[in-house]
Length: 112
Image 1 (cartoon, rainbow, N blue to C red):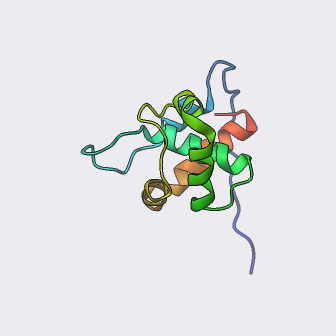
Image 2 (cartoon, rainbow, N blue to C red):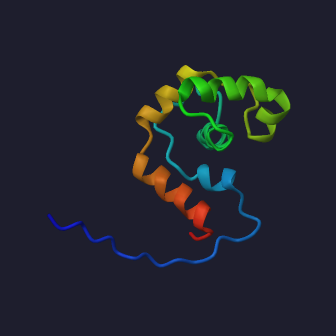
């Protein structure tokens, strides 16, 4: 069975002043407005940082967020303090995975 062809996309450099947090904020938020405490980009940034630090699941990501402390959470954009594992699990179950992968791939390769 032949593999699917992936078309090459046009790549332009990501400006130096554009942060991962800014790129993640472009991912559409699937949550209802009522009850939203944290921006979607901030929640994804917490997960990215936790995974880069070695977390391998939602429980570990939640533990990393709790252990990182209030200062780190504020710097990542969480004004209401830390975030728990269940919030991350619900969010990631509803996120547009293709869009998330595209944004993270753009950041990782330095293109947009």
